[in-house]
Image 1 (tube, rainbow, N blue to C red):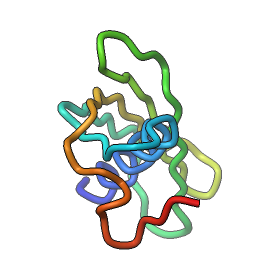
Image 2 (spheres, rainbow, N blue to C red):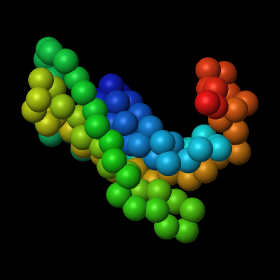
Image 3 (cartoon, rainbow, N blue to C red):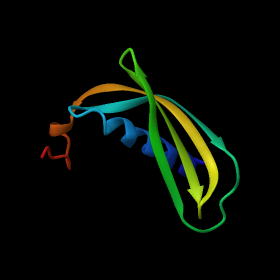
Length: 93
């Protein structure tokens, strides 16, 4: 379950952070639904931003195992205080 959550949250996070150019975004809530078990194979997660209002983003993500949906999630994200340019590994182009 923790792998499902991490992949779903990361997919949603990166979808949101792709729209925020200055600051890291923070997950303030995230709901994970597990729909089927994974016993082998590759996992892929895809996230998308659903809406933004009052400084908060709502994003959804789906987790696939060999092309079949195995879980989905929905989270709320806000801007943090850490500038992307101050973070290790980030470089503005």
